[in-house]
Amino acid sequence: MDFMSAYLAGWSVLSLMCLIIGLGLMIAEMFTPGLGLMGTFGIIALIAAIVLSAHSLLDAIFTLAIIFVVLFIAGFIVYRSFTKGRLANSSIVLSDRIDSASTSLDDAEIQGIVGKEGITTTALRPSGNAEIDGKRYDVVTSGEFIQKDTRITVERIDGLKILVKRAEDAKE
Image (cartoon, rainbow, N blue to C red; front, side, top):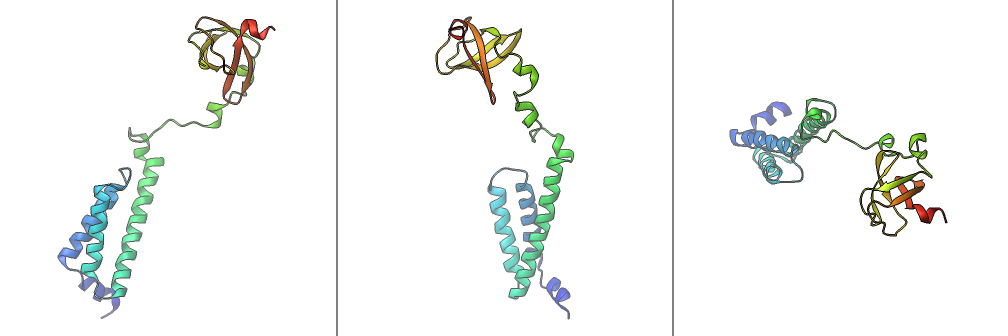
């Protein structure tokens, strides 16, 4: 008998059940974060499948290789589905992301508010909100406390921060 037929003949119903249950639990674990009960029982079932089916070290290594290949293919399919497939549009996957365009305050429109006056809509401790040119912005001071409804002036834009001062302090 060749290796493959001898290998397949060595599988009992119990070892085959352990393999199928273990693979199923490991694939189910791919949908849950962390190494939980499904992953733990899946590993135990896969180890039992290897032990029950292996009549030699070569059989055990071959079974382990099959398990790794099946889990790698399943992991690839799950990953692809989470990023580009049906799961990418489900509620379990975060669809919003921050990219450089959404976080940049370097465009000409936002730079146009430098030097303009506004009014605080919340107290700045040292950060809060202000209305400048009819738009609400998250702003920050250089450390001082500014009361709500105080006139402020935009000093500069530093990275993602809009730095402001009291309007009377900026004129000094």
